[in-house]
Image (cartoon, rainbow, N blue to C red):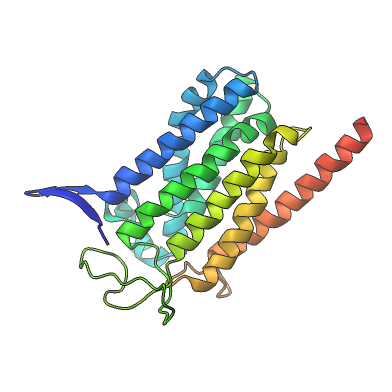
Length: 255
């Protein structure tokens, strides 16, 4: 694919960084629109952006460190900070961003559930566009396949195995997240309690990620040999179901 968009001498403009930045801005823009619709100050989203970015980067890096090559990073702790050498995990970025949101909402005295609902459509849409980064970079590749829609990387700067047809799991995820975005976007005005949009996102993301991991070429492994993403996805699905049950019971009690 195209891991390098532009190169001039030793300067390289990498597709991954450009697309991830644009994806973050898309999510921020949509969340700002949601804040206006819900009658909240859009500046809240703009203020949160810096903390979301920091929490996401730190969480993404720690996830990769813990579940990829922990021994290497224990022996070379300075490499933990070398994000430019590659190695982040989306699930870690979501966890880091969520913890940042909890802290931010407590500080601003804002309802966490309402704030999470504002972010949910933007997160899903941002993840949709963000998969282009993985597709071009080849850093999140699928298993070898003989299916006609397999993709083959030939650029030696790609992180995927070269000259082998692979499952296009980036496209699988892209389609899944876009459908999830459409679901949340269509249903969000019908939810009568704060938290439903975010919990639907959490459940949908968990299901999509759990299924896609069966086709991933080099998944991060949790203790016991199970892919870490499937462990966290299962936890996300269970948490969302419990949350939806509690919100449903709360609505019944209020009603």
